[in-house]
Image 1 (cartoon, rainbow, N blue to C red):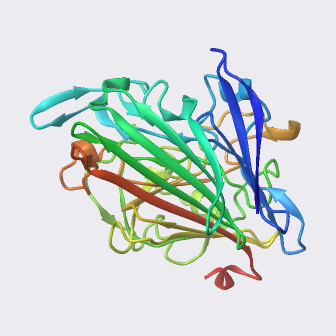
Image 2: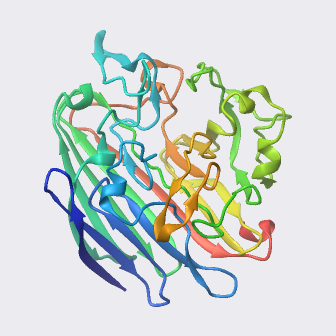
Length: 359
């Protein structure tokens, strides 16, 4: 086990940004940046033992600072995903947020946690190589009430688990919803389409959306629909289904209701890539997971000069349901003063002979 800290670059404002590479003895490692707590690299073996980077991203800080960076690898918050009309109420008081997605709010606003330079400490934990990031979000930032003290700890283990542990405490009632926005391709970043990946979601229901990707407030059974991933299904086959809700956004950008009790760490997704044999299992303590197939992705140059195209990666964003500050019927994202928000997500990587062997 080891942690290597390096200067990654300076922001446009002259702030130093560091990278933290967490290594294991077999050569697997991940690199996280103090800018946005970005998961910049993640190298894991395929069935032959070849290490490849399975997350999309950029080589330089300037690229991550681009306005059109689609949240590559970032920690997003204070509230991940969408809030309708960029507003909600706390105790009958209207809270107005920044509207950075048309008239709506998404992923914490114009800056959000994904564009913040965090303080960091690297250390060796009982489970593996770790780095803990810190940020104090001031009252009123992007419109959110309360001074929010946030910590995010990333740990890379010998058995190829990436553990993300979030904590936050506010001095006022507020909403908190933190997640990671990595784009994965288990055949290796820059290897093209994700359509041959097979995915299984531990979800019996999902939250339908309107034409602006805002949940309608209902929870619908996946049974008999194109949203039924209770058994492994090829991503391309699912996207090509003629479901109007999929067609309207050009793929999947939907919240699935994770089976089992919230606040308990449980499985929410499994993915298998046949060519490489790589598998990924995702566990979470949150009630939902957003399955996103990079439908709005604009072609660009990625790491090592490779070309990224639309639907070359997928996201599994563990979360409170989108728009839940406005939907009393959804699990509550509200945090009382002094109450500690906690959230754990685990991405476990391996190799398998087939999708059934992933489980």
